Amino acid sequence: MKKKIILFSLVICVQFLSAQCNPYQVSYLSSDISCNGADDGEITITAIGGQAPYQFYWGGPSSFTSSDSNLVNLIPGTYSLTVVDSNNCQSIPVFVVINEPT
Image (cartoon, rainbow, N blue to C red; front, side, top):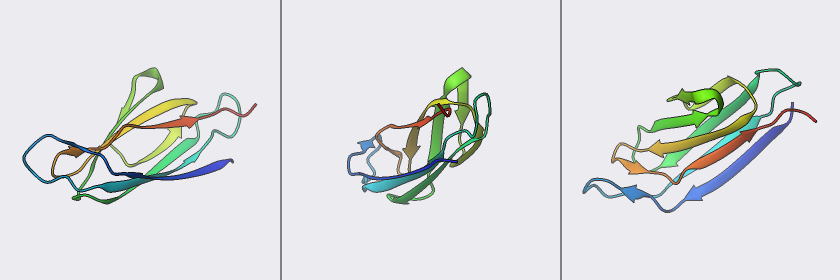
């Protein structure tokens, strides 16, 4: 199974309330599906900084939604994530692609 590790810093966040927005980092580890037609892709998210706890808002193919940080049994496609900390500071959207083997 092919694994990808991506780490990036989110130094820009959108402030919705009067609370201070502190930058936070979001990293993810993703695994593509193992064979054509399978639904065994995975994405694991880690958020550090900002103000915990975090809320996770996922969207994906076939009207997929989730609020979990760890996703399993994924079909191929593009998944979008927005993270919001307890100060209601929203991250820049993150896009993760789960691929089928060629």
